[in-house]
Length: 209
Length: 206
Image 1 (tube, rainbow over the protein chains, first blue to last red):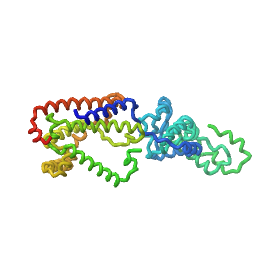
Image 2 (image 1 turned 180 degrees about the vertical axis):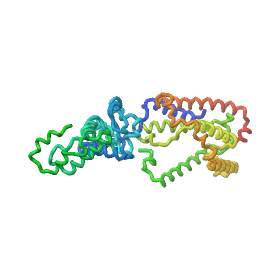
Image 3 (image 1 turned 120 degrees about the horizontal axis):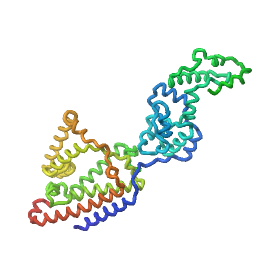
Image 4 (image 1 turned 45 degrees about the vertical axis):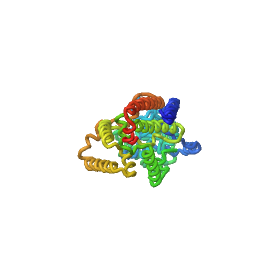
């Protein structure tokens, strides 16, 4: 055996032994700048309202990708139409990288309230994942606004508030199949244009359904 | 940092230029180590020359160790490099055809180009054969080979994952296997060389 053969064999063995001491490989993680992260966290630009989500679902928006970060049991019990379940404890699992780290869909995270989805957003955003949104208020807000929409509380209803109420009633019919009570009569919205300040206190009681 | 091209840190023209320079280097080394000698190359099948197996196995193990360590040192993200899906049946058949061509012609596609540049006429006819094979395959790609191409699909195979061992340990095992094969093959070569006279060796161009 020649001298060069021996040197090459020694180098290969040294390299092989060195490799034993290293852990398995993982894709490089990009880390986002902390100041940028803090700024984004304060700006609330990540939030989308339940109305926007409902609208996208009703229009069959192909860019919408809903992700339920609650436990599989909760997911089975109730979730939004077409939502994918990625439980909070496995959001960093390599299985879900293709869903969460991409720039094709508008991925909207949701949980019961905003908190769990917000935490998931923070963890994922810190790895520089883009385009992730959080449904503000979560399923509680969904229940309150879309599944059981309340008529505008105040008599001083703006056109915008009234339109939103009508939209929510439509959305409720879309998602539950239940025709909202008083659809044709709509007595409360009818009272809206009146500048009836004196009725104000009385009307407030109708706020929560 | 790397790989440069998939992360668009390098424009396509420079990518081609670098490929060109590496190709020249590769061809030069092939010629310098005697790989353009068909009898040396075919010797790996008969046992009188171990150069091919030593070179290719060393290259594979060096690349394996180098990529693994460089990934850990933050120099190249190997998850951004390309590796193809495995279709084991066509790979097996293709490998057998390639091996047959290797032992009959005494060239692999790379060394045939290298040898052709040194003026060897058998290399030119080998290249002509390669071209006939390539164009024959292209024109029958959809009509004849579709069932074969898609048979034995295994997806992206990763040996350490498949065997359930740590990547570092797998690399060490392959490195040891490479060294063992070098030593054994060297002994086999020495055994054959004893039977050959100086005149034989001269005739083989070794």
